[in-house]
Length: 93
Image (cartoon, rainbow, N blue to C red; front, side):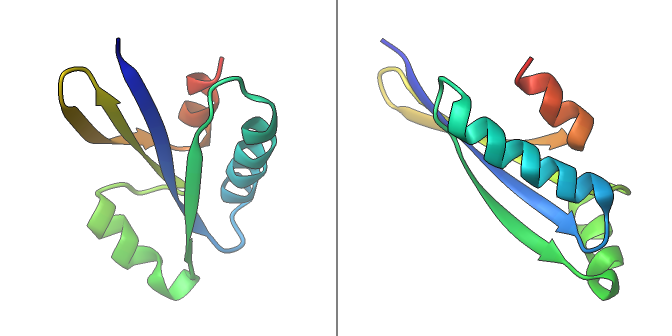
């Protein structure tokens, strides 16, 4: 039997409509989705914007990563750059 868990990390830029929409979407989806998941938010100020663009090798916000952990015979995990708000919505379609 394979079990898994999903955790999202969202780098949300202050004043960014897409960042705000992604957080609202995650909160709403977390309440209603059949498969539980967790998420945390890294609030990014305008002054920090370029630092996170370089660090995460992504030009736009939000910057969303997914940590997926699964267990078959042993525990395994992977961290993936999911993308932005549109890609996040695609995950839950």
